[in-house]
Length: 166
Image (cartoon, rainbow, N blue to C red; front, side, top):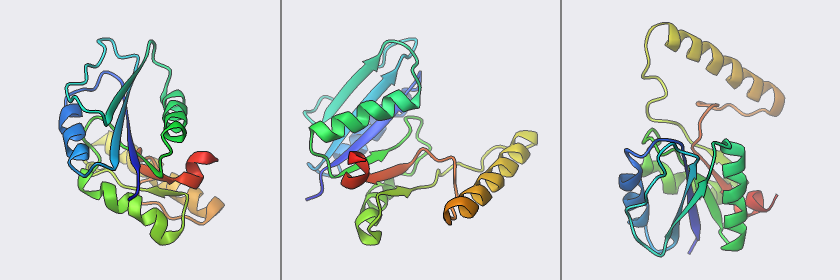
């Protein structure tokens, strides 16, 4: 049984949080949820009560780096095998959560990137800028480390125990 921590950072975004939490809890007893409220104007109230749902509130907007460090420390303290990060706004396909986590062991990797389900939903000038930036970052990743990422700006990723420890 792989002990999986799903880390959900949130800043003023609570619309899909309960739905996401319920979905993750239904994946099995080996899944734990950590919701980090990154200084939301109105503190996030976690409605799902379970011994597998944890919340942490940062009193000011500290950014994703601080939230990730909190999640990594939490994962180490709970002896987690896999840490998965998803956004609280519902843009990551929850149905891909286990396959993303399982790809770590199948490919013997420390990190695996997923893709957003709505990465291309904007139109007009904003979409043109996003497309240019995405293609540029895809090229840089390929050029520097030999990785072709379909969604290089994704917040949907999984880390192995080895990746957590590093």
